[in-house]
Image (cartoon, rainbow, N blue to C red; front, side, top):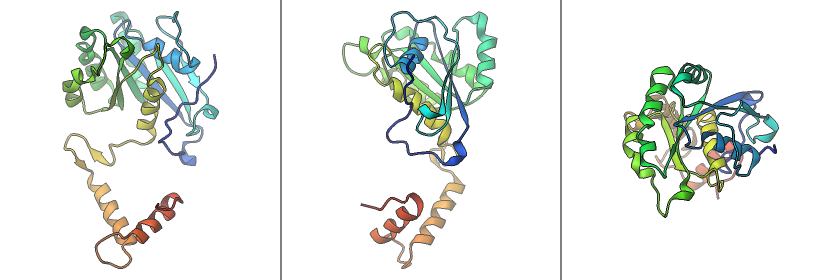
Length: 236
């Protein structure tokens, strides 16, 4: 199968510290929500009518990712008989994509089971994705799970996608990858909804360094200098 570049255009190149790193992303959810189809659609860049119920592990090599990291994708079974195997996969994963079917309301009602299992096993960044959005007559159904987003603070992103039409397929996995490479937790406390103390200290330090004229305001020239020093990109 042809490989696809796994990145979002808004994500900048990672530093050399990411070289040779493998990010392990697991996909879990109820039966027939399209877990395997999502992985297959990402890798082959096309929809497949026949997909195994559970795919073997798939590795996207470093040369196919902008951030120069390998991506290991782990499909999981929804059977209660395989829960121990799912837990083993959780323990060795860096991020999880929890899938539900937006065309069936009962599907979203089972999200708590998978999220609770993550919570007691290993808390990691989670992308909550409503698959099969192509089956909706119109409008978004992601609002249906707002209470879920409030109750599980480790959910870093939520979106709808379609494995059949490829809508947001690459974005879904890109967000999971981004959550591992560029975690928000060191910067922002989702529970308290405020910046972390060390991040505030760092921001104040940066402000003092670049407020050259000591007027308490970062001027355009000072912002330009900050941009050039930190990103090599001028401020336009």
